[in-house]
Length: 243
Image (tube, rainbow, N blue to C red; front, side):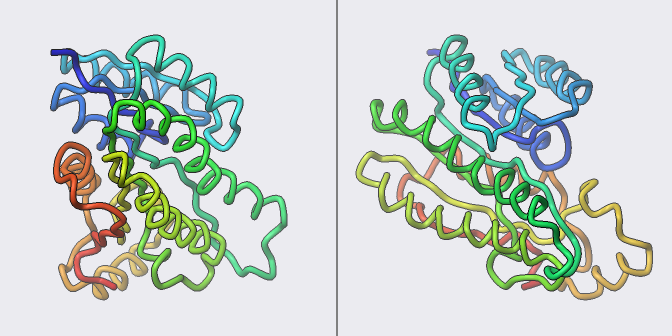
């Protein structure tokens, strides 16, 4: 029986890397991408291959359709069609909306939202042909309730949530499930800008009394990626009871 294949975007560190490791441990061949960090991406590749699976690394912009198409071409050549797509690539922007340069808006829309469109558009035909597949989008609680000083980020994640619900309805007749994980405060580099007192205040707001771990996100994503064909179109909060 041939190994299944997963693509995890934004997988050089943090949540994306943890997801890639989880699937590799479970015997999946893994394609991983990131935008800039070639050294980190290759380090992740070596780590994944230690689990006796094949790994295809790709350095490129998932918000660019040509680069995304080149990656999918390599994936098809090496592994065949995808079984699981995990759209994790994303960036944040913190600041007042009135001070946000238009090019920063364009960049976050392209990175966080257009990347999801590109990857889904390219993954869907192979999934429809085989009448099976899972798409999991990594979202945020701010896509549900919004965050002051993170308007653009909140807008992209809210877009991902609506995209997930709509695409799930479109693909359900083809036995393809689409869900999103709305992460709360997860202990990754993306949150390391916080001062110690800010971190303490944040943790005080979370009923579980701690930040989430990237591995906890990975466990949930893996679960969504391999079973339960009736669960689709859901935005699943993973936030320790915060929101």
